[in-house]
Amino acid sequence: QVELVESGGGTVQPGGSLRLSCTVSGFARDYYLIGWFRQAPGKGREAVAGVHNSDGSTYYADSVKGRFTISRDKATHTAYLQMNGLKPDDTADYYCVADNVLPAQWYVQALYDYWGQGTQVTVSS
Image (cartoon, rainbow, N blue to C red; front, side):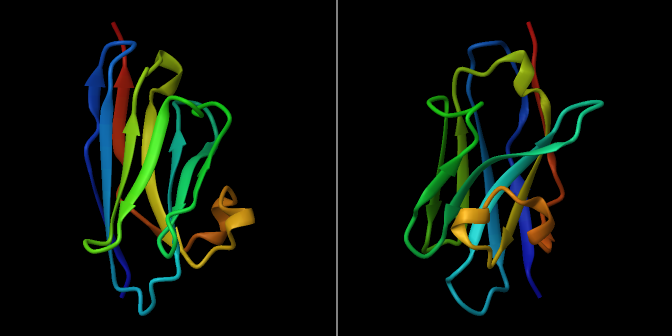
């Protein structure tokens, strides 16, 4: 049984930083992709970033490139989303996802069967 446990999030001023964590358990093999999606109030869900657990390859939405960094610790099955230079537009509920998804399709939410509980990120002065 696959389980994703998220932590992190909170409220920060514009320009500040936060780090999200997602610990994954239950996959039989190491070949899976971990990512984050977010959903702002009144908007649809969008992909933020992804990292492949097997080789650490990373993928980013254009809106967060240069500000967010995703990484993973293979030994602890934990992924991290370091968010710097946060903007009010980054305010959203952030959801960790994991599944055996092709890297080229990392941003397709319908391909992920496993989701974390979500954590709120608020960027406000």
